[in-house]
Length: 122
View 1 (spheres, one colour):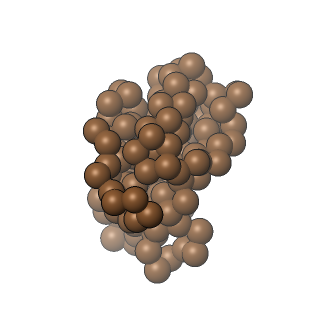
View 2 (tube, rainbow, N blue to C red; view 1 turned 90 degrees about the horizontal axis):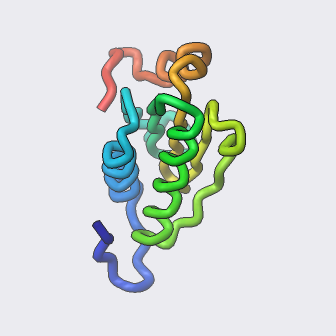
């Protein structure tokens, strides 16, 4: 799936989020959670948290996401933690993606910190 954006037009945060979610799903990421940060953070509009079953899968999910965003939207993401594969942070401009091994995700519990007080995610 390639975005059909006219030359010089940047993708919206919602378009980036949609591509992130489809990439994570395609790569068998588990327990994908999207959190709307609009009005709550100046860092990004959306945060996505997911898990991979192993360090190798976590790194592969990150690699594929980075490549798809580069191809579809010409976005060059910043990446941290890929070498270890326990927790990879992918900064895609308006969307921040955290890819964890399950044990590490449970330890840090980012969802609890960022979920709206109503307890619902998108």
